[in-house]
Length: 86
Image (cartoon, rainbow, N blue to C red):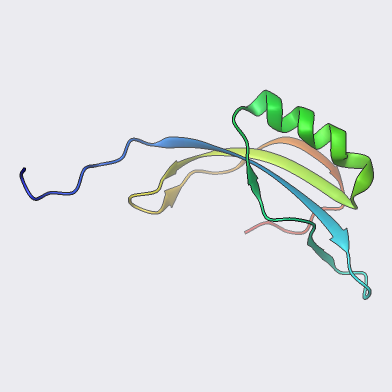
């Protein structure tokens, strides 16, 4: 062993998130972001729950967890009210 930490390969994150409105009308996460196995599954799941929440979004992005670098998000599906994403 060389003592160096292994370099992780870049990965492709695919995420599904839904939002509901609280008593004050503010958008809040309906559940923790869900990592999805494929873009197709993320879009299918987002379409399935779109009518149940104020907003739904599915997106993908490249990621380097070892360095904390993340690419720009690519929106796969968007429906309803979505807050500004950082």
